[in-house]
View 1: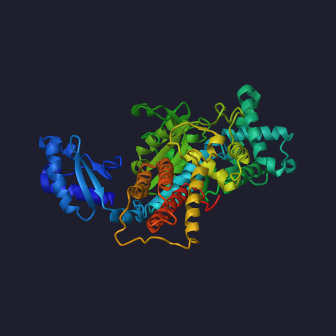
View 2: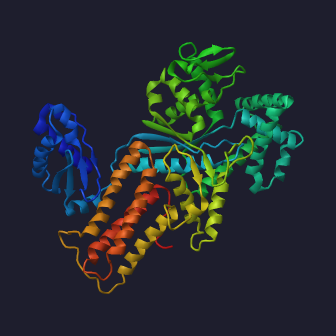
View 3: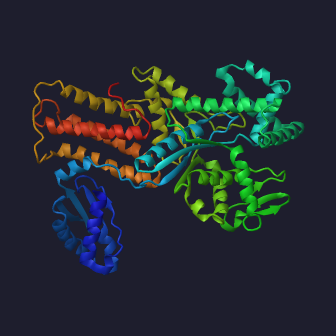
Length: 564
């Protein structure tokens, strides 16, 4: 309805004002309800083109709109310097409640890359954030008609792997893979992560260890090239890599995420990255002191090494390989990547370099970055030092906070608490996770919205057993003020979804759902539903509200229970 109104207003402007209104952008906003259902400032926009004051434009336009929009609009008035306020007919609101979000992506192929934990390291709070936000964004794009492929990327080769394997080999007293059987199943992931910390410390503080780690790193690259499965080092490597993958999958199942279509290990894209960079040495990249670099200063960026002097691909070359591998596998119309802010400048350089020889591919890729993830009272995390906020720490904190709150310790409620606490923040901001706040039923939280849905379901269930089913909907379904306020809020849903898809901002849905639940509470406090002459209309509104809230929660990956 909003886009239909915008088109009709644009057409009316052209009929009245000719070329001055050509290509004019119509913005319909939601003003405070006392002023109307929609408002437009188009008269202010046209004032310069026509050399008139806005009200001189608004007055004939309002007359025209009363005529052309007579089926949809019950009232049009002019406010302030020339704002046009529009009130819709109640019947139109009922129709809008049933509207579906636009299929704006309409079959476009989308690659959604998120989570991206590295094998041989622990999945931390930042990975948890990108996992949940990426899952929600992919849900959004599917709702908008996109064909979404969910992919995951992680560093199974590279210096961090060399550090970890070096430390494990030292701990095992040599290359003895048979000793790995002594590690208990529930300790494997943490055990490997601890060895990364030990290996990193040794690399930074001990020159001999550093030399050995560099050598092991080269051996790991070599075992990939030769597909070595049999050597002692290879057995240690492949076993511990699989432990990491198994741990990640276990957590994803716990988070009830939709499964990934593909997991890209760095070893799978490294050669393609090397090949692609080498093909453009001289035109895009250049040799410098035995390495291959890209000079980003010409674009206000920085110089980045893509191939080291040891002829090994850096993270930059691997990212080039990944971007081209995703293109080969899925030919996406649009691709997005979610990482923390630490990767922002790095990926900007990578994409800028690709733009010089594959501009369409670079321009189709959007990088979203987030700030630091902390827990109340926590400091900055660092996987290198071991001072890290693990994903499992956050989930356990939510469980612990919910134990003392009866009815909120269920897995779906704990998951709702964490998901919503992350998703309600705008992408890009720092997040301080407060476990107690996240499980509260009295604030802007996932469990609060779950309870709000269960409350509506309870009203509907009671209505089914009420003998005196008072009231009828009627053909006109005219609404009283309190009913209309709730109906108007419900109609915002499709507009919020459409905007969240375009701007890649799932927090807009969280904000809307919280406001919707609050509006419902105000409605229910002031409007009796059961055994009231207007029961039929009010029950319909309760049902529409519950359906809208449920749909929004499911988009966020949050269950909408019928009782709590």
